[in-house]
Image 1 (cartoon, one colour):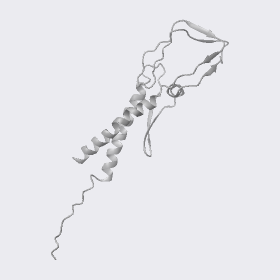
Image 2 (cartoon, rainbow, N blue to C red):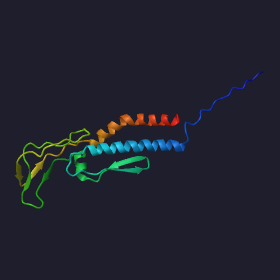
Image 3 (cartoon, one colour):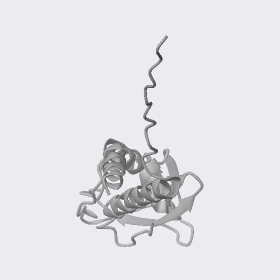
Image 4 (cartoon, rainbow, N blue to C red):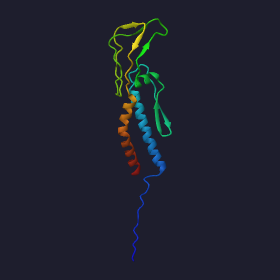
Amino acid sequence: MNLKAIPIKVPRIPFEPKRQMRVINNVLDEVAKNIKIDFDVTTQTWEHRPSFKVELIKDGRFISTRNQIYDFVNAGTRPHIIVPKNASVLRFPGKGFRAKTRVGQIKSLKGSKGSGTAYALIVHHPGTKAREFAEAIANKHKKTIRKKFRREIWAELIR
């Protein structure tokens, strides 16, 4: 019986773990930077712009703000009653108000305070529709993150 040895080629590991982690972290940093830019875009026409920060966490990056008004605009509000706190009457813009943001859109427009002034002792506010910026931004970047990882990993492999 004649046995013939057949060499088995073991595929090499594409690149060592340190290089893999560097590629992963570089892509995560790039994506987090782009996401932060998108959050900034949603407030670019606001008079009092919130700040957003990127934090390094165990499994990735976390982009956040401590601005409560941004949270109200992003998540929306329920109908609520508004009463004066430090005055006897409420004063607010009259007809023609136009919001600076739109639901599900990563942008901030000019908006309008409206014309005239209205006064009231109490306001039954209908609530604010959630703009869902976080969801729109997540959806935008979900579409591209795989491509970015693939591009960077291949670029590292051919080096």
